[in-house]
Length: 529
Picture 1 (spheres, rainbow, N blue to C red):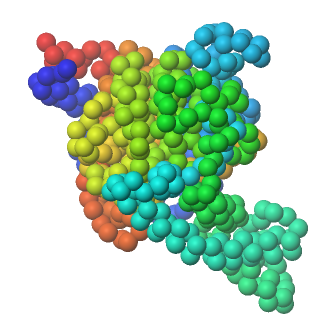
Picture 2: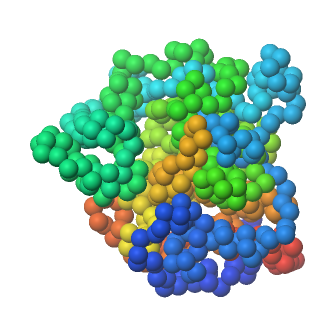
Picture 3: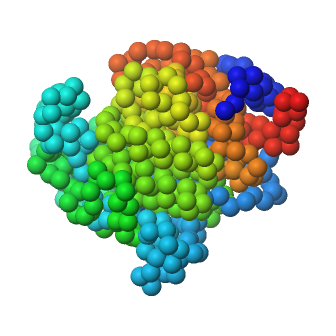
């Protein structure tokens, strides 16, 4: 265990390694005009000073710090909904288990998983699942406060989902009318404006979809269909106590000792359902400079796909085993863009996180999208049992920022917390891979986390001698300090940005690599005598 003195020395040494601009909050000025499509597709790579966009200074890092340097390959585990490993912009960066002979039906490396060539699918053919609160209620009233809380929250969510149905149906109906008129499923706002008609139903639908386009931007058509799917998925699966998605997996989710279940099809039974994990993988590692889609944050990365997150809440057992699988197969960074409010077997996950810490693996986790202070509200998994003291020092929890600098810097959906969120990163309108060779803008702390995982992979690639703990604190301490009062949540509450996370900063790859270089060379370590 480190002494208090050694922690002070580490903090002091990191501060000396840090560029002065990152140590003291500076007044920045954001870009006032909207970003061009090409800028928006890679805004998280841009620089707040040079480009007036609150990105992570990734382009600057490559141009000024990494040019003509060679890094070491780093395996990044993607614990998520699955990854389309055949995507044109990902297929060359997919991890391959060289200890396993493809397709022979034998567990060659004797790790308990047969033919796990590119990772493992702990969900088998399962796609949809309950939320954890639904599973608690489905199990029956045991008189506990947990049951009472879960029942009250479930009833509220069902009521809300039912209230959203008319809007979802109305938007979808408007889209179908326009789509049938234009004879295409996807269309632009210009297409809508070009329609000349006296049909009142079509005119209403056009006005509705123009409103959506102005509110949501280029991806407004897909947002309409996804919104309707989200509402109906909640009612049919996530909140439905009569639905049990686990039956098709064939294991006992309450038995952590039963490990060899699932299969090796890492994108699952329906590749389209691997959208979330494929997007996350692309943010980290889609090939740079190949002319396809966007650029990943990190080069020299191998993506290990570990499918453990369904359409609904993940099971603690799957997450615990997925973390251990990634660790045991060489991952040095694990991205976890998932979370939930209840965790019946949280100790299994805590043990897996400690195992990852012991094996020097960094876990990057999304803070969640409920606009809540997670110092107060529960968000699992986490690295603190009491929301105050960390039991492990290898977890980074990430909040999301928007592309607009100023009081709207923090994404209105992002969770926050002075103690339990470590740092913020771009998480709105992030462009990356989705299944079947497509690309898409997505948003969420789910997108902010892989942006940071990419920076962590960069550091571990070019400075492999640094530990997971060192990389965590480099990322936190080298970030760009923001001296602004910002909106939090959807009600317009204002708080100092510095009060929303432990670091009070947004990630800065350029600063992080400078600090990593100095720390790696031992300049700062000399303070330890």
